[in-house]
Length: 190
Length: 147
Image (cartoon, rainbow over all chains, first blue to last red; front, side, top):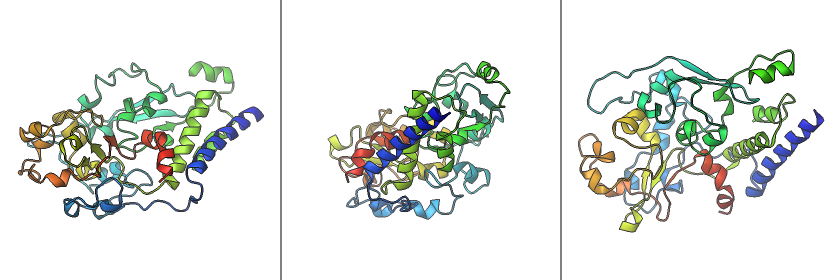
C-alpha cells in the first residue's frame, strides 16, 4: 500500500512538475475567460476583413446550459431541454432514429466500468457514423484501449475534439464495479 | 480535480506504468485546462490544406456555431465529412459544385461562396488542426507556454 501511495505521489509530481514548468507564475485561480472575442482568440486574424461579421461565441453560448469544460456548454442538456433545435436533415422531414440502449464496457482495468448511452449519441448522430466501420454492433467485439482513445481514435474521434474532453474521466467511467470479498474473485471478473 | 487526486491515491489500484502514465497525463491536462493561456473555442477546426498556398487565409470552422443549428449527422453522415481535421479533400471547386460546405453555403441555406473572408478568417500560418483538442493540449503545452 505504501508503495502504491508512493507511485501515486510520483504521478502527481510528474503532472504538477510539467504544469509548473509550463506556467511558472500562473496561479490556478486565473481561469481563462469562458468565451473569448474572436479577434483575441489567437486563431482568427484580427486584421481579417470578415471577422466583424462573424457571431461572437459569448453571444450564443452564454444562453445555453453551462458546463466546466469544452465550450462551457452542456450540449446534451441543451438539446434535451430544448435550448437548441438542430436540424436533423437538410431538406427532408425524416425523423431521427433514436436508440435507447446502454452498453456497459467491463474491461476497464481498475477504473469504473464505462456506460455508453446510445440515446444521447443517436440524437446527434446516425448509426452509420460509428457502425460498422469503427464500432462493431456486437457488444464487446471492438477491442480498443484508452491509448487509442487518447490518440483520437474510437471514442476519441469526437471526445477530446468536439464532445466533452478526455479529462472528464468519470463521465464515461461511471459504473462502479461491485467489490468482491476476495481480490482473486475480482481479478477473475476483469 | 479532487476526484483526480483521489484517483491518484486510490489504494485499491492495481498500479502499473501504463496507469501511472495515464494518470500523469490526465493530471497534466486537467491543470492545463484550468491554468492554461486563453485560446479559441473548443472544437474550432482550422483547415489549411490548400488555402494559404493559394494565397488565402486558413479557414476556421466553428463547431459550436454549427452544432447549434445542425445535428452532427447532417455533415458527418449525409455530407460525408470524415471525423478527421484535414482528412477531407475539400477544394473550392467541390464547394461550388455543392459538395462539403457547399451543400449549405450556396446563398440558399447559408451565405454563398462569394463571401470569401467569412470562412477564410484564420491567422496566417495556422496549420490544420482541431483547436483545443485533448491530444493537442497534451502534445504542445511547452510551445504554448513560451508565448
